[in-house]
Length: 466
Image 1 (cartoon, helix red, strand yellow):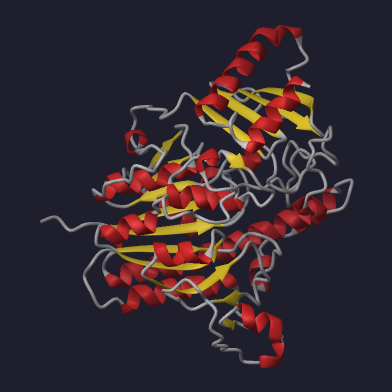
Image 2: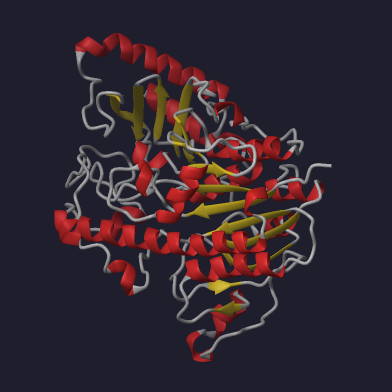
């Protein structure tokens, strides 16, 4: 009987699609992520559908674990109901030993359902990387016991003590989570296949890392992206969301370069921690029988279009890294197929011979892991709360905006000629027919993905008519 492959999911936070060195034009150093790309299949146009909350990562992570599309989640993904079968549950039922570590933004009870074990678990959206409140695994899902392991108890006040099992003082979150994964791999006593999920907090702000990594990037030598702007050209309804307040207005070149340098440094430090996990796989002798997925929850602007966050439908916000490596995955392939992050669940099911639950909306992308040019989907639909809707169809992309309940703007881009989404063609009479066709396709996809019936879609489409 053929041995079933193990699964390792490496999930990053706020890592944009083009910040793996071999897949972008930036000077970021990621030798170990590059290795995964070299030895596997990279989906260079992988995306999230957007978000129904300013905390875009919350629905994004719910989609990853359930394989469900944006408007088929419970609320904004803050909880995952028992009727939505999760990836971890599916692999448990298939006989896998499941272990989770790191960030979990979708409810404590759902973590306990998804994993048989885990450690160094962070419940929430963000934290100081050097002072992260972590939990040991609690199979009841309550996480209400106080088992503090703090070198300096004065560093944790009484309120915070009630909120966590322990806090690591002076250890970076990426190192803590990688170490939990390494311990799991080294201490395995059984031969049963495993599903290991490591969810890093990096490179999400606050952007901090060991100084030697920051020293790799001189802000004065950082090149600004071609679509850098001091301010966004119009009010998109989210110019004052938390992420946008991380830098001053108008954006200056010097401050933007500093932020980008820190972002790169965090990614390079994260890359070094991923190498530790890959090394443990090698040492354990299971590398050749482990399917590895490297992915991120959303992108980040960092000065592009005058924005700093991920609360938009521009490519810098919705496109994410997605790499598969391992048995059944072709080496050295770069696919441009239209895939969503929630396709990971059914793809892993196909690669491992596991039955995907009926509650999954995503599609396996194994069919696009070769030179067949299978695009999986002919068009991609994006949404952000009740303010933005977008469609990518062929080489064209349309973004519509509703602010304060009224249609406030339209952007039309030819992505083949303008990959940085800098030149709005919507006002030009020469593109009127294309604009009409794209708007029709947008409405068709709104129906297909049940957006028109969602509370966010209802408000958006009402605003489009206002």
